[in-house]
Amino acid sequence: FCEYLLVSQTEPYIEQYYNQERNSNDRWLWQVHSGLEQSIFLHSLKVEVPLTEIYRRINF
Image 1 (cartoon, one colour):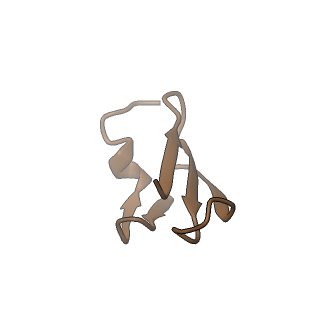
Image 2 (cartoon, rainbow, N blue to C red):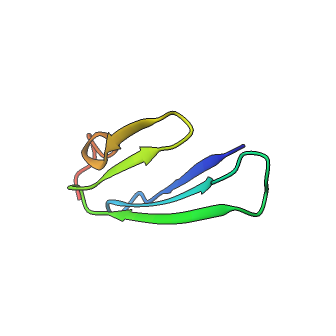
Image 3 (cartoon, rainbow, N blue to C red):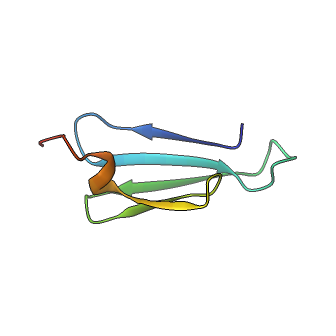
């Protein structure tokens, strides 16, 4: 377990938690992404995903 996202259902807001060192449980980093113009880099998959894709079928 090295990364997880908390995705809001009511606004374009995502909290990202990822473990900087896979063998350590005390190196978790926290990052907030808000607004549809942002992207999230998923460290565990090495991909960048725009928030517009995550919220593609959601109207606010």
